[in-house]
Image 1 (tube, rainbow over the protein chains, first blue to last red):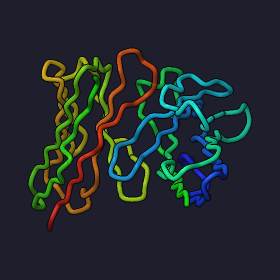
Image 2 (cartoon, helix red, strand yellow):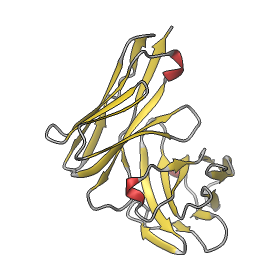
Image 3 (cartoon, rainbow over the protein chains, first blue to last red):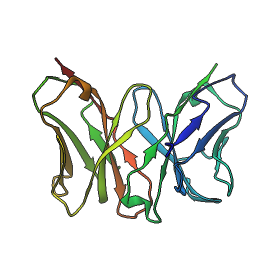
Image 4 (cartoon, chains in turn purple, blue):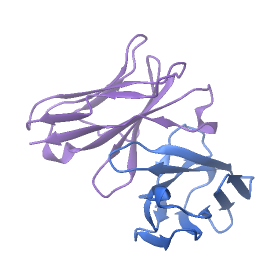
Length: 116
Length: 113
């Protein structure tokens, strides 16, 4: 059973470009979470999605950031018009049950975004 | 405001000793607390989960305690090994049961042979 997959592992963008980060949850998992980790800081929650629904986006910046988890295919975190402050590691996690809060979250290897 | 604090200073110990890491929180009523391990350049890996009505949990050389009165969790690694060297993160979920984890900034453990 493959773990959580994220791609690309490293992404370099120039200011003003768009970044698309992909996450394939573990097989059988229907809950996806995105976190951001800045250098020397802890993980910060961004958004929690189930298939075709955004459950909690309280950690998402109001502008330029969006996330989706379609019925088919991976979850996508999209950052439009990137700025240098967006440079960070972005981690995706998934969990298997209807009440995910009572299960651990399985993390992917992360996508390291560098904005030049 | 709500805070989760872990010791930001690295913890250096000798192989074979017990490592103890601390996680303190304020203004939360967590349903449960989790501990993760993170190695450089990798995603966190789940280690242990403890619920608010549990005082202690063990798994092999790992032990976690949870004191909701003190608002503190302690994470112990007994008979530590150099391979235990990593950053350890505590994470809380509020009683509102959202599935969203709030992480501390992590404590780096270095076990010297």
